[in-house]
Image (cartoon, rainbow, N blue to C red):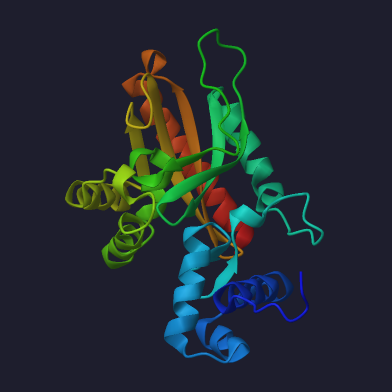
Amino acid sequence: MRKDAPRVESVHRALVLLKLLIEEGNLGVTEAAAALDVNASTAQRLLATLVQDGFAAQGRDRRYSVGPALHNPGLSTRIPQLTDRLRPALEDLFERTGETVHVAALVGTRILHLDGIEARTHILRFGLRVGVWLPAHVTSGGKVLLADLTDEEVDARYKMALTGPRGQHIGVDLESLREQLDDVRRSRIAWNFEESEPGVAALSISVGEFGGQRVAFSIALPIARFTRELGEKWTQDLIEVADAVAGRRS
């Protein structure tokens, strides 16, 4: 490349923000604007784009941190893995249920499965989905994480997603989703009965934020093996495990 080749300013700014997120751990809009020498609205749009593509995550305090798309062992700068911190609790959940369990993170309007343990003792079982992205509104993990947000925040995320390149494939009914999220906020548990894929039942609970990243635990199994009694037991298991995680973090 020629040394005097013009740089693409928006790309340059996004890369500067990524470098700052990795080096500093977290970043606010005001700090981002000062670092880039731009106004706050420009910095906000750049950060929102990074969140939408999984390179950043926004916490409840409105600050931004490194997103799951950068949780890659091939990076020259190793980013601490929240999965290391959550693995003991995930193993506890697996021992309690004997079914496939996952840790999932919310990125924009999708979830990314970061870690999981597969149940192997059943002939008919639900396989691991680690590394798989799915729409948040059709998964139990996605719904429970969206329920952590306000309706205004949920609407803003879907407005951005629906106008993006994947918008025509999202197929979300926002009114129905808001009703489901209200139910989740009351019970702490979200459900998925064959919404994400045929033959699957799943339930999830949010375990809050770790380094600015919202994460959830989920239990998934073939719907043919699901019973109301198991659902009631696993609801309590999820609550106990999530509360234990919160207690260790505080």
